Length: 267
Image (cartoon, rainbow, N blue to C red):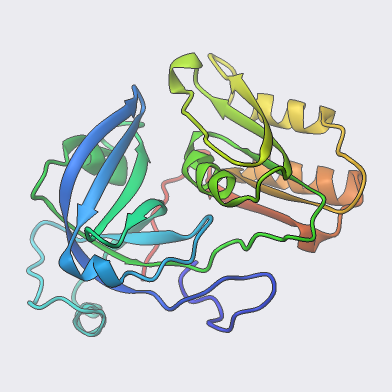
């Protein structure tokens, strides 16, 4: 997702990203499977937020790699012939420029996983390097309604979008999580109807697809945002664009992960 057009259009929100070398400031468990990590750095007072579902790419180098100091976008690029980081992408949940802090929420799905394992071991003072922010999904004040749907990996973005929607805006949320313990507060000024779907032992995405297909969308032009497993997203995209006939530009459905594959990507 890094490298999209830097030109701002009616369908994108963009301020240029840059490399940030930060420290873990705090670690807090929101649910048994969701951990919030606060990143701190004096330069984050100038972090330029793009809002809604903006994300950053976290950099993970092999332990033997010695990083040059200061470590900047330019020095990271110069290091590529010798060492390429593995990347994971995470949504900015909160940004507090007055204190130079950024929060990101991590789904804990195994200590043997790259980013999840790092998040399980993270302690205050640990270094964390990430590039961002990405472009963001812009709000459409002309839309008559909004549907937000996703699994736990999409909850941070859903939460931010809900906080930014205008007062009274009709919005339906379908959120699939493992069980009731994984539900999170979703404050909003919008007129929101939130439906929590408890997966329990069902395959990921099964309930999300079933309930999305059963939705009765209100009249008028609306917008759909979603994030989940790749095949689930493909199914949802087909439902909203082909079955319901929505304009593709009014849907923003993103594969956040792929069943059976890691989320590694290279710079």
